[in-house]
Amino acid sequence: MGIAVSTERKRVAVLISGRGSNMTTLIDAAKAPGFPAEIVLVVSNRLDAAGLATARAEGIKTAVVNHRDFADRETFDAEIDQVLKANAIELVCLAGFMRLLTPGFVEGWRNRMINIHPSLLPAFKGLHTHRRALEAGVKLAGCTVHFVRADMDDGPIIIQAAVPVLDTDTEDTLSARILTAEHQIYPRALELVSAGKVEVRDERVVRLDPEAAEDTSVLMCDGGG
Ligand code: GRF
Image (tube, rainbow, N blue to C red; front, side, top):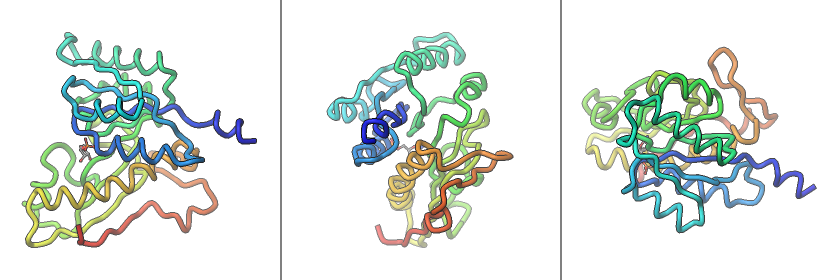
């Protein structure tokens, strides 16, 4: 029944710190009929995050929890947790959220919080990933959506996309190519998690849906763009 299906949509919060282009792709994807999640809340630690205006223009509730207002990471995370619970959030998407989360908070959202990182993890965790990929001379770069664990940019991998690194690349051109891939895989990963099509077993993600053999968790992109 239509009504029964719609009530099963997972209530999702997106946590941002900046422009929010990944957030926007999640919002757009969730507009599709039958998408198993709805973006009901956007939380930023920065008042000036450009993504907040985008979310408001989409009619999505926003909240700012400024980390500078808190004495330590534990109390900041406790406030974020309270905001998420007050909004009956079931799944959390980190999308350019530039704060390290405490182990207690991460554990509380275990397998219910996902992140996107612009590298083929476990390579190039942390900041300046594109510059470091260029310096290392890798020929393939990419992005990863993964379940969040306490260590930075660590956790079971849901989807990865690979893009070529060209000799002519700069940080700007490489990050633009990777960002295009990010926008493809993040909605797809949210769909898989929200629909219950994946499960974490022994800290690896396995697909449960019958079409898993066709709909792989790997995306190979070409160099154009
Ligand atoms: C993206 O590259 C994402 O992978 C990284 O931070 C960036 C956020 O960009 N974690 P946006 O705010 O989604 O445009």
